Amino acid sequence: MSLMGLNNLYREVILDHSEHPHHKRRLANATQTITLKNPTCGDVINLEIELDNNRIKDIGFTGEGCTISQSSSSMMTDAVLGKSVVESLEMAQIFSDMVMGQKHPQADLDKLGDAAILSSVMKFPARIKCATLCWWALRKSLGDEER
Amino acid sequence: MDSKFQKIRNDFPILNQKVNDESLVYLDNAATSQKPQQVIDALINYYQNDNANTRRSVHTLGERATEEFEAAREKVQKFINAEQSREIVFTKGTTDSLNLIASTYGEVNIQAGDEIVISIMEHHSNLIPWQQLALRKKATLKYIDITSDGQLDMQDARKKITDKTKVVSIAHVSNVLGVTNDLKEIAKLAHTHNAIMVADGAQAVPHMSVDVQDLDVDFYAFSSHKMIGPMGVGVLYGKANLLKQMPPYQFGGEMIDFVNQYDSTWTEIPWKFEAGTQNVAGAIGLGKAVDYLNKIGMQNIANYEHNLVSYVLPKLLEIEGITVYGPHDSNYHNGVISFNLRGLHPHDLATALDMDGVAVRAGHHCAQPLMKKLGVVATARASFYFYNDKKDAYMLVKAIYDAKEFFKI
Ligand SMILES: Cc1ncc(COP(=O)(O)O)c(C=O)c1O
Image 1: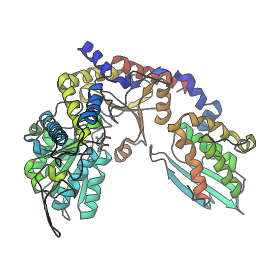
Image 2: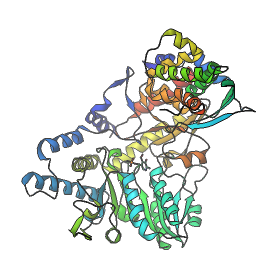
Image 3: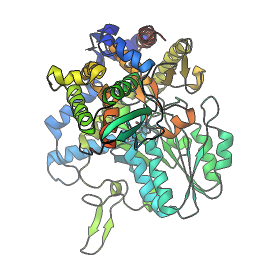
Image 4: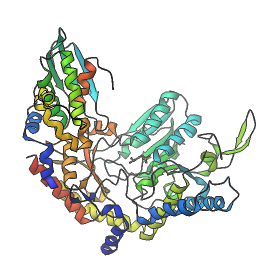
């Protein structure tokens, strides 16, 4: 396959997000903060959310990680900013289904915005955790402790 | 020499395959080694012809299994030059061996205020058992530091090991920095302070000839699976007089002398430490692995790997933006080479190398305190064995250049 195969994972959009991540900053008025670790590699994400009336008024992340985890975090913050808690958790579910290879209607995937492009990670099983770490952090900080 | 090693490759069927349409270049030997057909056949033969439980059966198969199991113990004894075969305890692996020492010898001999000395380069399996023992006993855990080029700081060792020290436990070869530690010297230091010397030999026994009597270590732990043997079996070497004094690790079948309703007595070493049905096939497979390694000769293996390192290390160091951890002089660096590329996370690098068929590890290598010391969260790691060749080394370097080009770094 050689490096051509890498194009399937590292699309231009993904590299852009990782080079210039969106919302990579601390929040002044965070209502929820969480730190999650990827135990296999030691990567860390700190996620901060400012909730207002059950809506994500602001969101930011910091921490170290690979291209996939950084761009996934960036794309996630784009996707859920301004959304309600219920909508955000629904998106988290769609994302995790998607990378595990479960089918969702196109309309669902569209909700994810750029993040939908990470469906490609499904072909790189060792890297799925890198993509899902930020979404787990989101779930946990919004009180969805299941799974 | 090299042509002999070329033929060796054919003994390892797993190496002859494609991954991602590229020929596999297996460079994750520090995690686990591949197995030659001879070892695989020994496992099949055992289950096809000899399988029985050891030491508890009078019948012929039981006798045969017991004989082969004990023959494997003798092979291991000679391989590391232990004085007696009863100094060889079969365990599940290095982790199990080190836990055994901490929770038997450690439990009995460590008291509040005592010191346990390890080093900052230890694998978690030679760290956490001591850390938890120190917490239980209110003892002090001390770390020997490393020098700027990633070698064990012997000056610091002289400072850290004191009359309060009861146990010194150090890796023989680091699974990250690739250095060999001067166990003999550290054991001398430990003994002048009446401490015992424990060594984690997981990365040493597969690659060099080890003589536990010459090193004068009190305990020495290693795993079969890193030395072309099966997974799930390992070894604890211990000096007989120490093993004899230690309480059992686990209780159950085959480790007893007499069992009464309210008390029991224990059988002789090494069986006192081998409770329950053992991994007989695994031990026999390990015995076969020892035969295989002996046939090539551990000195030949060490020389061959040294040549490979002398070839690949300078080539890696030439790559712009690379940081290689541990010594840059190949005379002091074994075939475990950890590195990072500026501007690329090791995970991304490992995925890129995998696309070229090159299998390396990326992560913290079960050495988080060392990662912190090095100021990184993770590194990539290529680790060689005697069935790797210069072409593999070349493919690694080429794949790194490919990755640099792809990620434009
Ligand atoms: C230096 C060192 N010590 C201990 C271990 C643990 O070995 P095992 O997982 O076989 O118990 C390893 C292997 O990962 C190692 O490299």
